[in-house]
Length: 381
Image 1 (cartoon, helix red, strand yellow):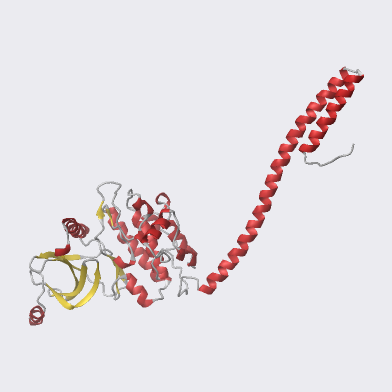
Image 2 (tube, one colour; image 1 turned 180 degrees about the vertical axis):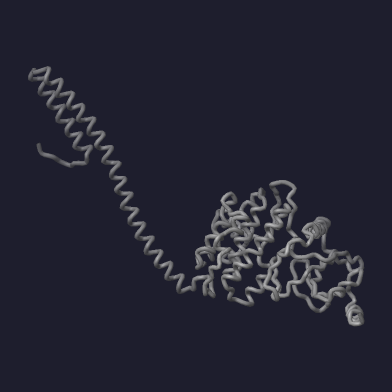
């Protein structure tokens, strides 16, 4: 035990029972008001993550949210391999800090890992996808919605290649089928969140956006330079521009089915049972986006096809319109001819010269009206 004693003597910050020791200079992450340090479990002899938050800057609602996050992790009771494990937590009143100990993700967030590795094979993407889905499924089965699924909140153990979902600061225990609070990261927030009526299906939407991030290495809606522009696109159902650059049709189809209207979204079970995600299908794609050259060629081809389609549509529309005009003209002409026949019939019954002349003039007028209605400019008869 001498080695452990030396560690606790060198590093003064430790848990109340002295089990966990903070490695002061080894910060491995930060977010909002939270800092994450590498720490050491003196009982098991393994590294852990020391999460600390300065409580001086927190109001009562934020403290309540923090306690809520811990409660959710405790409720998960470390039963799912893909949900971050909570080991301990306490308040250091002397230093005004709230501290909780979790398992450590040796390779950081999924976003950091992807940016570092760059080229991710399809089989790895499918593996991560299923692990994330299993994590979300576990949460939903326990009436918990995460509300902030994204690569920054998903971590990876580089030694095993497995992922874990973390950062439950915005997670919520579902007390009813609908919730009303607007929370999350704008690029990953489903449109119904802005309408303040949503349920666990928002996590499916965020998963779809996360899949975009995994495939492309870019944050969805990176074309927008302000948050309001993102809101406008999301509320109007405009998808991120990067989707048009995704090469893999099956992955693109899954994304489309996750970020559509909530009533049309795939369910967790439908995603987990997806034949493509469960297949051994793989390919040698190192990059899942069209290059600029490929994309420009694709757009040029699409433009040519579009122009051809537009021309064909114009002709079809003109033919339909012409048919309607001709049909109406024929109907009108038939009515006039019917009247003319009635005049001729009456004329046969009355042979006086004056009446005959008058009836002939009426017939001539009716014939002229019929000709005009059919669009014929002149006729000799």
